[in-house]
Amino acid sequence: MQRAVLVVCVLALMACDDGSARDAGPPPDRAAVDAAPMDTPAADLGTEATTPERPEDATPRDSTSDAARCGVPGGTCCPAGEACADGATCREGRCVPCGERGAACCPRATPCLGVFVCTAGVCGPCGARGAACCAGDRCVGMADVCAAGRCEPCGRAGERCCAGEACLEGAACAATGFCRACGAEGQPCCPGAACVGAGLSCDATDTCAPCGASGQRCCGGVTCAAGTLCRGGSCAPCGGAGQPCCAGGACAGGTACTSGTCGACGASGQ
Image 1 (cartoon, rainbow, N blue to C red):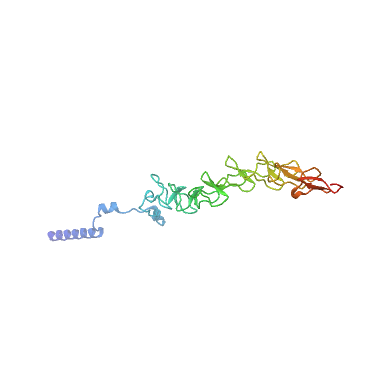
Image 2: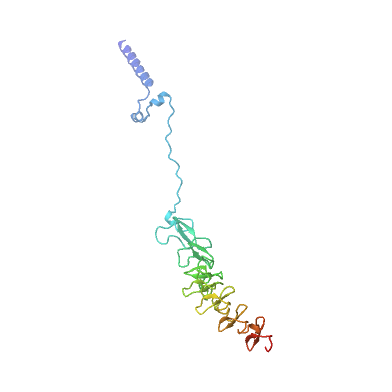
């Protein structure tokens, strides 16, 4: 009897241990406990989790370096060697086209293309006044001359003599290579011993002086004013009694030209 009661008690104790194990569940894994996230105060307070800031999207760079792109028109000037390729020149750190009309001059032995020439750093047509001379020191304008590689006006008083030592009317080419005023009274005679205006003639000192009146030089070496006659290069009175006959044998009233001299006439025995 006692043995039976003891067996029943042992079975009852075994049943109790089995239920406690089922209620408690399997023993917790230590590694899982350590890895489990802990609640933060923000989560406890109901605050939304903050999303970490993302770095700004960077624009992808061309794999070609700036140094490899230098030298071409529109690109940067190369830091070493030739700054820009043929057909371009460096301006303010950039390569710009050069050599064409209106473009910058190229930094080459031939700065401009074709017939264009470099003037003040810009390519343009040659031969115009103020521009570079064309080949052979030629200029387009008839009144322009090439001087020091540039076309400048010529021919007027104070300007350079034009080609062939020529100057415009009223100026003569001096030994200095510049035109000087000529032909007016008191000025040097113009080429060909010419003077400008009536009543002036080139005298023995190559100076334009008044002419034609009595005691003055004959104008043009042959002409004198009325009442005078050109004799020996000077104008002398004529036409009066005892004076040389004027041109055409003319004499003043009451006189007649006899053997080149004007004498009284009309009286008895004359």
